[in-house]
Image 1 (cartoon, rainbow, N blue to C red):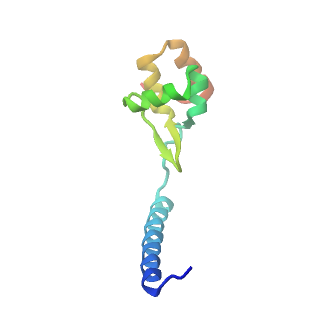
Image 2: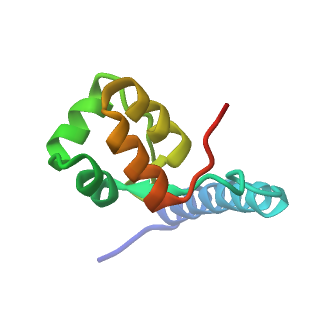
Image 3: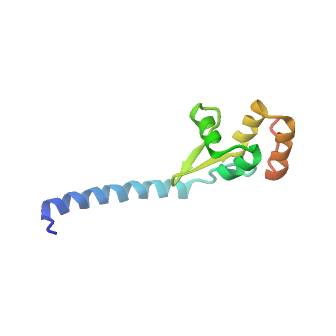
Length: 110
């Protein structure tokens, strides 16, 4: 396979631009004190499926309608414990909220 110099130069410029972008992101993260408050944990789909006794598809539906706040890291879905606490207060029983707080040791917001 033959790659001429022009194609190679274009690809190298694209690669260099992408590396510069990643370096900026790393610098920002390195200089940040903390991403999450100390009393906040990250939960994944498995944690929520076990807690709510629902399927991953149900969690996806909650995310799709905007009822369940989330974010992704490298394609994996995560939830902040503080967001889940609010979600439980709105949609589930007090027993579920108590179980969540017991298992994840998060402080109640007043």
